[in-house]
Length: 150
Image (cartoon, rainbow, N blue to C red):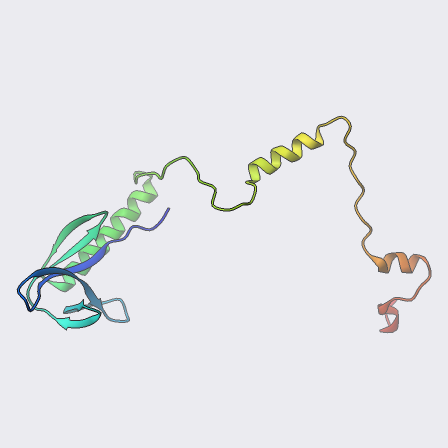
C-alpha cells in the first residue's frame, strides 16, 4: 500500500490581488522555511496567508504558523501510519490487476502439479554436471590438473 501524501501549501495573495495555494518551501533538511513558498517555480516571501494540507482532494487548515503546520503534517502522517498498522486504514480493492506478462506463481504451481500427476508422465533425469566430470572419467586432463590440483 502506498504511503499517504499530505502536501503542505500556503494560501497567499498574488500581486494582482488574487488568492492562490502555493507549495510551501523547505530546507534541504526537510524543515519548513517560514513565510516562504514556491510561486511560478521561484521562492517568494509571503508573510500573509495560512497553511493548508492537501490530502485526497481535501484542504485541511493547519494554521498561520509554519512550525505548527509542519507539526500538524507530521501528526497526520503518524496517525495514518498508526491506522495502517492497526488494520483500520482503508484496504485497497481485492481484485488484482496483472501488471506484467509473467505467469503468476499460483497458476504456474497448478500447471506443474497437473503435469506431474498425469499417468503417462515420466520425469527426465537431470543433465550431467558438466564436461569436467566426463573428461575425468575418461582419463583426460582438466584445467585444475594444469594448475597443480588433482
